[in-house]
Image 1: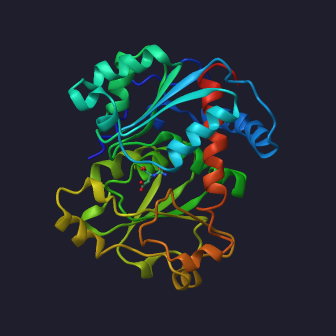
Image 2 (image 1 turned 120 degrees about the horizontal axis):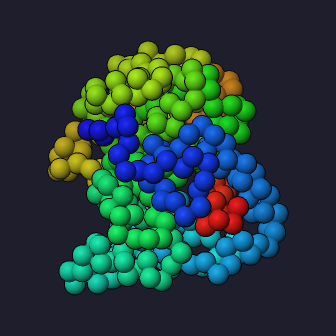
Length: 328
Ligand code: NCD
C-alpha cells in the first residue's frame, strides 16, 4: 500500500521556491513547479548539448549515497553535478564500504555526509528513508528512490519527455504496464499526471501486482482518470504513450514468488506495437528492462527509452540541482 495522503503531512510544498528544499515526493510539486523545472531544463540542455563550460555549481559538493544499485539515476546525478562545475562524493553500496558495515546507524551516516556536502542524493530500499534523512540533515536531501514508494526525479524526466513530445501535460492518455504494485517510478508518475487536467491512464498489471484499490481511489479523487485493463487485447489504440516497467524482483519475499509473477509479465514486442500503438505515440521505460521489451522494438522511432528519456534525466537533474542549490 502506498498510502497516498490527501493532505501530505510534514513534506514541505515547494510553492515556487526550490532553494534549500528537500525533494522527497511529487506531493511537494504543483503544476507551476513542474513548469519551473522545465524552464531551467531548457537552458541546462543547451549547456550539456553544446558542452558549454559552466561554474554554476562551483564550490558545491554533493554526496551520492546509493544503498540500492543504480545506473541512470546515479550516473546522471554525478554527470549533472560535474557538467555544472560541482563535485560529488560517490558512494554506491554504503553497507559494504562505509561504517554502516560496522553497525553505524542510518541517522549517524547521514549526519556524517551532511558535514561534507551541500546536498545529499539518497537511494534506499526502505520506504520513507529520504524523509528520515531529511529530518536529521540540514542540507537538502533528494530522494533518488525509496523502496517501492516514490522516485520523484524520474518523474521530472518522464514528464519532460512527454512535454517535449506533445507540448503539454494535460489531455494525455497513457498505458502503464508492469509492476504497478512496486514500481516507484509509476507511483510518482501517476501523482505527476494527476497535477494536470484531463489525463487518463490505463493500467495493465499481473493480477497480484495491481495498484491497491485505495491508491486508485486516492488518485481518482485528484482528477486522474484510471481504467484497469485485464488483458493486452483491451489496450486502446489511441494512447499518447506507453510506459513499460519490469517486475521489481528485489521487492519479493522469495525467488519463488518472483518467478511466479514473472510468468505473468507483459512484453512489448513489434507485433504488440503494430496491433495497438498509434503512429505518433511514444514508448517509455525507466529501465532497466529485464526481458520486458523485445530489443527488436529499439529500432522503432517511437521507442524513446534509450534515447531522449535517458538524456532528459541528465538535463532535468541539472535543473533540479541548480534550483535546489540556489544557482538557477
Ligand atoms: C527505476 C528504479 O530504480 O526505480 N530505475 C531508474 O531509476 N531508472 C526503475 C527500475 O529499477 O525498475
